[in-house]
Image 1 (cartoon, helix red, strand yellow):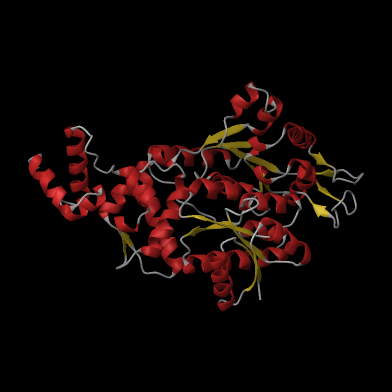
Image 2 (cartoon, rainbow, N blue to C red):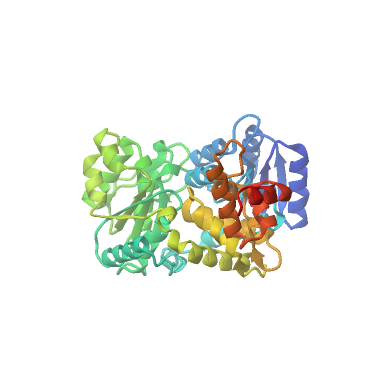
Length: 440
């Protein structure tokens, strides 16, 4: 029976989670603070940690950082406010396996837990050769101009030995691009090893990169294979490379230049044969200019660069992406939701998507849970999307702006005045009065 550590200071919700997990055949242990959680982690082993974001002594992200610093490889799931994309992205960057949004949706929570625990148990026995076969092989890149350009660049560089630097905002699909380059290279049958540089504490980066031997430092209770050796013959993907400290940049540069590594505590050098792909959401040119990123390392990792366009620059592909995410979500959640209403699709196409494809996928997944009658409607979309797309009517707006907002809402709803009033956040009576006022 999988063991889960609950970290939640709300006593009522903590007990609800405890009973919910027990009913679904999980062995759960409740704690109410970071301090209590760390005590339990010292005395027991757990298959997963389910932690709230806001805790009385420290927050959930702080707990995650402590666990990572202690080299404890336990899947961590963060519970946070509904569709809080910024926090979710930060958690994933720090090393969280996934997150669950509040209000708590039992079906979604079970899906996340089952996926992580089953995956984690498989990884215990997986071999380096098998790693390559676990990666998704194909991805829809879109048919817009920006998407076509992206695909051409990937097809062009994939068969070469060049080191690639992938740039783009959070959630645009940088790791998917890296996996695709690997799969279309002559190293496709060898491992693809991904490392989040933003989640590596600066004092153990050498161990993560090059490995260590037992007893080489406090806490080194076993031999450890570093990511360079694990990726031998294949591709090493260093995500968020801009987060490395200057000292760790030096370590990385030396390994790339010499193509040799030495595990911590060992006198034996190991030759490495890897293809390097790096990614960042930062402007490394600026970082080089201000001295926070080494220029020689920048040129080593940037033999070819690929920029992943943001979703707001790929508006023509939103419908196709949304449909693909809907198909995936309906299969995962076992819900027969197959379509998105015209009005809801128009809302999705007008939203700015600061979280890009990851944000779109999350919202479609949640909308699928809420949808009835097999179709996602505006009512199933989160307030972040609907409120940011069509502004509510404000009596202080000029008449022309107010008239345009009404016309946009009516166009979205194909003239349905009640639905348009709902979108604008006004009563049906006010809507009819405004239509008469503006002779619409």
